[in-house]
Image (cartoon, rainbow, N blue to C red; front, side, top):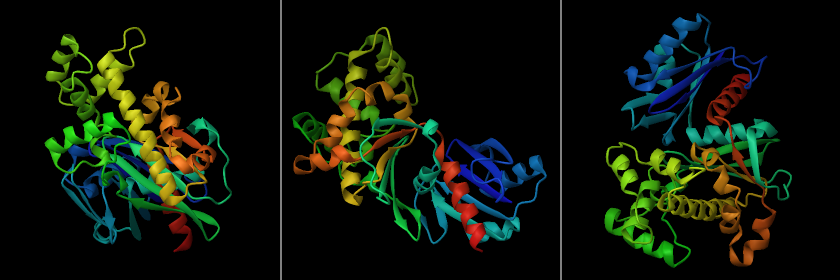
Length: 330
């Protein structure tokens, strides 16, 4: 039996899978508050006590780079060493994946109902696939065809330097350079980036802020949900918040096409993370695709690349797929 886990800074989703049932049919599952446990081993023991089912192997995806099967979870203060964890829990083997690598592993398993297609394009058989996932941060990964199957690879592409595309974005870069020094794509194209876009548009004087909303934002620990909610209000969308999300979508479209060009993603681009499903009204308006295909001499190529939004929590599925495949080969 495989234990798969999607380990987040706030909550973690654990589930048991069998080789016979496969990665889409968990035998048992539960969600835990990550901060309620001092380490991953303690959480696993709590899950085992609930299920009373045997566990032989485990595969966990975590937010952050995984090097030599070890990871440091900054938001939790946990250090996870796969070999040490296997010894402590008396498991045959434990594997660790970056959360975006796990999401990428899920892509070949996704059903049409798991996706919203933004652009049908033309899928090239065995073509590389790009995954761009704006959530709290900006994660990126890719898949390549090798040995008769897709293999997923992690990256830290969200931390590359932000490249402005027009005069407004040049102003944005200058504004954020004064605040942060180095400006990565994550600073503008993620949950932590949305308040930066809002501040820029407010302080530039392009839109007057709502006094009522400003009061709400002043008392909020995380301003992003308030900005998104105000922008998508079906009756009275806030103009400043709406402009903030439109700028976000412009940057996301450009960065998604940047990754597509770098890996030649003729198999498609998949938008994961928590934000794209919430922003479907803006993503389907044509604004995203306009930025996605605006690549000069390569615009014709970009027109052929399919683009989808992942509607399901794919990381756990990917961790399960990877772990089951490894179990079948050990």
